[in-house]
Amino acid sequence: MAASEQLSLASRSVFYSPEESTQSISYPIFMSANYQYAGDAYDQVVDGARRDVNIYSRCGNPNEYKFDDQMAEIEGADSALAVASGMAAVSHAVLGLLRTGDHVVVDLTTYSSTHEFFDHRIQDFGISVTFVDSSDVDAVRAAFRPETRALYVETIANPTMKVAPLRALADAAHEHGIVVICDNTFASPVVCRPHEHGVDVVLESATKFIGGHNDAVGGIISLRSDILPADWLEQIRWNTLTKLGGALSPFNAWLLLRGIQTLPLRVERMSENAQKLVAWLDAHPAVRRVYYPGHDAHPQRALAAEQLDLPGAMLAFAVDSEEQAARVCKRLELASFAASLGGVRTVTQLPATMAFLDIPEEERVSMGITQGMIRVSVGIEGIDDLIADFAQALEA
Ligand SMILES: Cc1ncc(COP(=O)(O)O)c(C=O)c1O
Image (cartoon, rainbow, N blue to C red; front, side, top):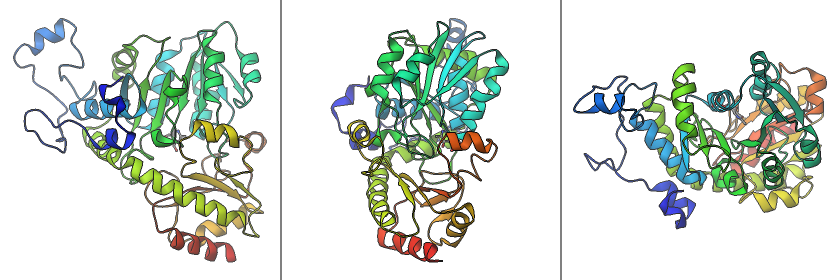
């Protein structure tokens, strides 16, 4: 782990060393696809040097390396590898780890594209999948088979805000040499650092809180594991990333690196706003239920308090019907009605009819997703303005 571990997360997020040749505090953008084999670079590459020598931007580039290192720093990881999107992080990590004949245990309520990746795509490669409710550690244990190679969960599940008991899951998996992969997107490293709870591989859609401004798409895979080899991510880079091609562009790496610098500040404000919005929604007569890890009625309130540094920016609430939910989202003026999350602006989404539309209703209901559910990614706006916006939208 990085030497500056004793510094606070805020300091580690804001600081990175300047670029050496220019001492530029803002890391320059190396907008080049191709690099010359100058000096002894050719001989070094022939001798097996990889990340130390720039070759071709699909294999890695200086901006990606800088972003990798900074992400490892704030995840408390030994190493990190950036890729083109959050889904590229999911697919590259899973396809890099699993082989035909392997079995993977996956939480039932993951992000919709992740669920479909496990429900369909991955099985085309002869990998079998069992879906379980990962909040039930005994059910997870019961799903393990001799050929189980990985357990896949989300720190805070999209959109039900279910919290995965990471330490108990890691202990159960590690007894059998099973690798734990956790998508930390809904939390961000400010809310939770799953490596600290025993998770081997952490994934983030950097598009969300890391970038934070609804502009760049990217993903990150980080590693801290006693099971996987120390160079596992470099193996992924050379055996999977360069073959599947999900490389992160230098410009997006630059934007995401810049995003890290204000990540704690943004997420702290968002989490503060979310708590106030939850308290207000809770008292509103049209709101049937609020889903939030910091809510007293959250079924895993104690676990959330123990595992999460903050309750976070993501919440959901239920109104009576899909029609009513759509009306509320359309009437919001300050908050945007849109697909993504984690940016500085508040965004609402209807999980049942947007992200999870392709998943059959029966399955959606078993995941806890109802028609009247509205997911909110709370931004950094003035909370009084935000509450006034929700008040006028819910009034109708
Ligand atoms: C929890 C979670 N994981 C992964 C992803 C995929 O990220 P991306 O859109 O960057 O591919 C998303 C996207 O919404 C998400 O919500």
